Length: 168
Picture (tube, one colour):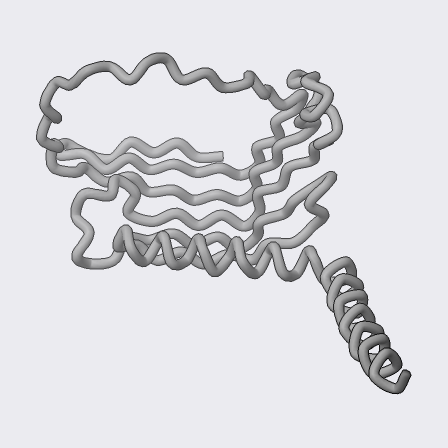
């Protein structure tokens, strides 16, 4: 008889620990997902020889804000066309439930870009790849935002004969 009590006590502690872990995941799912996204993006950026810094917050289900973005290639990267990109804020308001309902034109309500400074540099021409067999058409859902808000966007394209600047 005492052996059954020990078995149930052990099972009770195991289920209690699992419920506690599930509760912590439910409470802290957003910081975990945002932290993983930031970690993965920085690892990918480092593997492609450029530096990337940003802050991300918001709600996964309705809106997301990426702020203080700084993108710059490392000195050994001569093929990346962006010399520097600084963006204060990129925001998107969306409804994921419309995506699952396949109402793609109502998924994204607003895309916002504020205070962006992008400098594009000339790069050496990439070698042309060998012709290969076509893989086939890639089909993606057409998701168009209802409203796009651009504020204080500056673009500089560096060229051999001079720079092209687009301000505000």
